[in-house]
Image 1 (cartoon, rainbow, N blue to C red):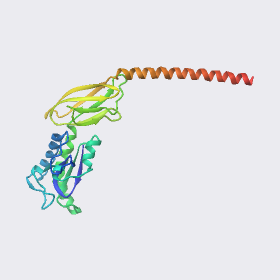
Image 2: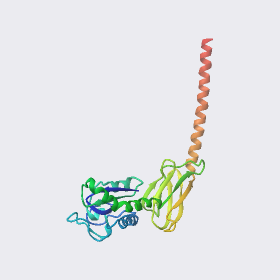
Image 3: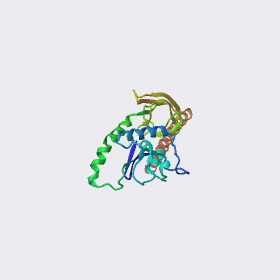
Image 4: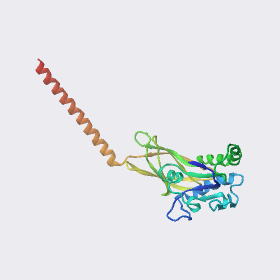
Length: 245
C-alpha cells in the first residue's frame, strides 16, 4: 500500500491510468477497494470531497467527491500506480495535494495542515488486511512465492521470503486461495467486517505427491553417488599407496 504525492490539482486518483479508450473508467479487479480507499482520503481532507471544479481551467477537473479513475480523468501510460498494482504486491493511489503545481516553502505548512488527517486515515487502512504466514506442513518453514487470491478476482499477491503475506481488503466474505506449483492448493474462508476489519492466518501446505517422490529419488541418487565417490577415492588411494611401496 502506498501513496504517490503530487501537486497540480486536488483529487485522489486511482488505477488504472491507462486504457485503449481515454475518458472511460479503466477498472481494476479491485475497483471497489480503490474507490473506498480514495473516498476515505478525500473525506478526511478539509474540502477535497466537495463537488465542483478542483482548480480553474485544469484538466477538466470538475470531479464528484474528490476522487477519480485515472484513465477517466486523463490517460497516462506507464504510471507508477499502475506498475505497482500489476507487478508488485502494492495498492497505490496518486494524491494531487494542491492546485499550485510547484508549491513554495511558505505553502507547505498549509498543505500539511489540510492533508495530515487524511494521510493518517490512509495509513491506518494498512491494518484492514488478510495477512499471515504460509508454512510447509513437514518442516514448518515459510514458503515464498505462494500465489494468494481472493474470490479469484483482483490482484494476486505473492508471499515473501519467509512465507509472510498481506492482502488489503474491505468488509465482505472471501474465499482465500493459496497456490504453489510444489504444493496442494489450500482454500480458507474469511469474513471481514467493520467490527473486525482484519484476519490473521497461519496456513500450512502439503507437498504434492510427485514432488515428495521426486525429492526422495533425488536423495537416494545423491546417497548412491556419494557412496560411489567414496569407493572410487578408496581405490585410487590404495593404488597410489601400492605404487609408492
